[in-house]
Structures are given as C-alpha cells and as structure tokens.
Amino acid sequence: MMMKFNHPYHLVTLSPWPLMCSLSLMIFMSGNLLIFTELNFNLMFLGLLLIFMNLYQWWRDVIRESTIQGFHTMAVIKGLQMGMILFILSEVFFFFSFFWCYFHMYLSPSIEIGSVWYPFNLIVFNPYNIPLLNTLILLSSGVFITFCHYSILNSNYNKSVISLFMTVFLGLIFSYFQYIEYCESFFCINDSVYGSIFFMLTGFHGFHVIVGTMFNLIMFIRLLYKHYSLYHFLG
Image (cartoon, rainbow, N blue to C red):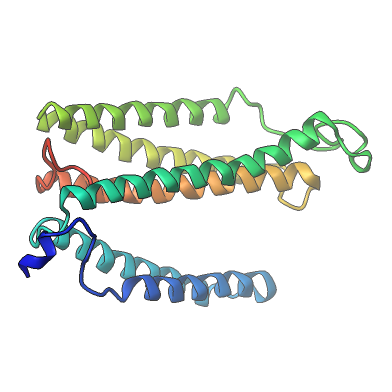
C-alpha cells in the first residue's frame, strides 16, 4: 500500500464507472432517438436514471480516494489541474465552431433566407429581456464562485459556504429562466438556420450550466463536510 505514495503517478483502484457511464449514455441517446421517431420517453428516462446512479457511485469513489485513502498527492492534484485546463480548452474550441457558424450567417447571409439576418417572418427575442437577465445571473455566479475560492485560500469557511451556495442557487435560477425562454419562443429549431443556431448554442450552453450546477452542488456538500482546506481544495 505504501508504494502508492512513493511515486508521482495517479494510481487508484480499477473503476467500472467510466464504462458504465458510457453504456448509460448510449441508452440515454438511444432513448432520445426513440423520442424523435415514436414519442416514447421510457428508454430516455431509464438512461438518465442510470447516468445519475453511476455518477453518484463514481463521485463516491473519487471522494473516498481523496479523503479517506489519501491517494490525491500533490503530483496527482497537478495532473487534475492540467486535465481541467485541457477540458476548458476543448470547450472553448467546441463553442468556437458554433459561433463561427453564427457569424458566418450573420455577416454574409445566404440567399436562401433572403440575404438578410435574421430571416423574414421570425419573431425573435428581445435581447434586453430574459437574455440580458440570464447574462447578469451567469456573471454573478462567476463572481460568487471566485469569491468562494478566495475565501478558501484565506481560510474563511463561512464566506466560502455562503458564496458557493449562491453559485448553485444562481445556476438553478439561470436554468429556470432559460426554460421559461424556451416555452415563450415563437420559433423552433426547424425554423431556418436562425432557429438551428439559436437552439444549438443556447441548448449546449444550458446543458453545460446544468452539469456545472451539479458539480458545484457536490462541491457544496463536500464543503459542508469540510473536505477542503487551504492546501487541498481540488480532487
């Protein structure tokens, strides 16, 4: 057992959860295809349930390795930091492709949509209503999570708990307002390239906010159990 701590590598016990999560995602996506063809939601909900079950057990194992077993050494934490940086970089390029599509159609509209942007006969959202409000909510959540990090570095437990709670709360509010925005939309994803770009961009962004809120919620629970310290607040 002591050999695990005498080298800089991330060696942990074998985990079935990456494979199980992949299979659950396959079931979930197959369920989405079934919705499009037969309006049957059963397989999709089954896949979603399996995803949450696997995530719970995966997070449980990672927390156990980090706290009780002490496998997350400083070298492992640096590896986790590098992994997070590469993940964020991949997300930047992911959304860069969508914004490229948007600006391509915005700056040089196709003749098929009348060479104007946005296309005729579309009732679009006022950017100064819900979109502006959601932007302010998202920026505020970023301020709170940054302040939480700052509070942990300064060993201020109460402020870190409050600021992380506000981050989770604002993430939920953002998702709720985006749901309201979708319900009030006068166009759908099939309504020209504008509808496709709008729902593709906002849909993927909303999905990232939901996933980020889930991760922040797990961090909040761990913060309540005092799993983080000045020297160990990652992993």
